[in-house]
Amino acid sequence: MGNLRKIRIGTDIITMLSVNISGNPVTWSDKDIRHVFAFSDVQGQPVAEMAFRSEGQSLRCTYAAKDQNYIGAFRIIIEFADGTSFASSLDVPAFEIVRTTEEADAEVGEVVLDIDGTMRFYSLSEAISKIEAATAAANQAASTANQAASNADEKAGLAQQAADNANKAKEDTDKTNENAQKAELERSKAEAKRLSSETARKNAENERQTSEKARKQNEEARALAESKRRTAEEARAQKELERQRNETRRKEAERARVNAESARSEAEKTRESSEIARRDAETKRTSAESERVTAEKQRVTEFSRLKSESETATDNAVKAADRADKAAAAAEKKATLEIEVDAKSGIISVTYDE
Image (cartoon, one colour):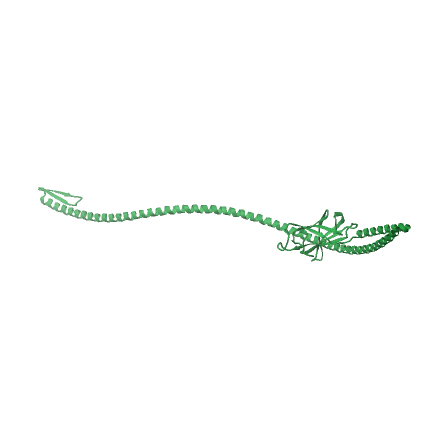
């Protein structure tokens, strides 16, 4: 099939097909065409029906990406309607579908190919037209021969030439009849191919319906998955909202913790200051207590001393009183005893006045 242009599967393929019949370009008409098929050499049968539109001497055929299920070399088969001036079918090598972009010669998206179907073929109507032309030429030659015979002297040469022309025309007619039989045989073969292609088309249609059913099921599964995805997305959004709320509460708690830590730090500083003050006060209190104990000891010592002195003074006073009593008794009326006790020093002074 030569070097076909390689196109990645899943790409809309548009072919602009032009065909010559006996060297003359064909002007297409939509009403002359029944079907246009994409024929897979790998599958050995038509696998999809292509949309088509006539554009003068080009036939625009589209192999949509959604209909592409196979890779490999492809042909375009055109099935013509009955009663046209074309053959009943036309088979033209077209393109090759590959798996990946790296293998492809064309860009993705949409590819337009110009294809020339330059093969020669005959149609039944073309053969009939040639037969009629040869018959008309034979009749014309016979008429010319008769006229030449009536004028044998003057037109003997013309009659002979007309006879030769008639023989040649008969040979052309026989040859045209043979071509007509061949064309009929080709038409029969083409009809058999058409029936085979129709069967393949029906099979392809069944496959298309099966694929469509699978596509619908996949679409339903996709819709269900999309619904689940949306539900999951809503749940995720709700979780995200809750996470944001929790994050806000965490930040508030963190701020409260920081504030509490600051307050605790300030309180700790206050406690440390109070502790220092307490220690200073305790030191002062201890010192004061020591001083108080020392003063108490001194007071007790002084009190003991004063008590001892007081007791000694009292004892001395008692003794002095006793002596005074005794002296008074002795002196009776002759003397007066004066006793004076110094409370601070405990000294007793005794004065006699005779």
